[in-house]
Length: 147
Image 1 (cartoon, rainbow, N blue to C red):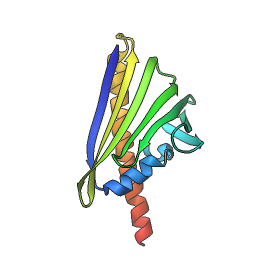
Image 2: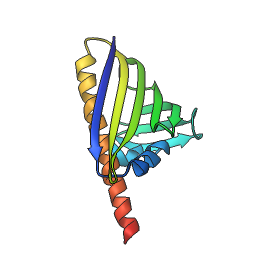
Image 3: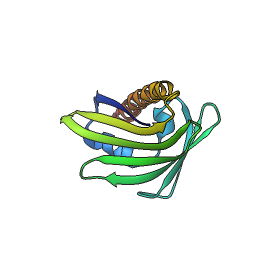
Image 4: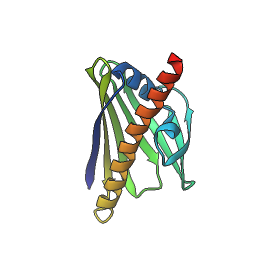
């Protein structure tokens, strides 16, 4: 059964800055506490990123689309330690104000109904942590650049 998990947050970064970081595909080990390493192979659509979790397990994503005009990024999770048959992630970046943006991170998963609630809760928390981590990472690099 398809389940949709969505986390939307307003962050104190320009939409240009947030989009630029997301569109570069990598860097997830700086944003997500559950990821210890992220290696990107290739560039743009068709590239893959291999992430190592704190448990030592691997996740592999294939980049499906990077739409700079609408600031939409999509990836398909092709290898995962989680019990899913389908995993499509979409990240949308919208300008809210001159120094703020909205990040909407949506994951569509096909998961057994017995594990749906637990996995959806885990993903929701991971996405929230990742958006917070993105904001912290970019805010600290902006501060470092201003010194």
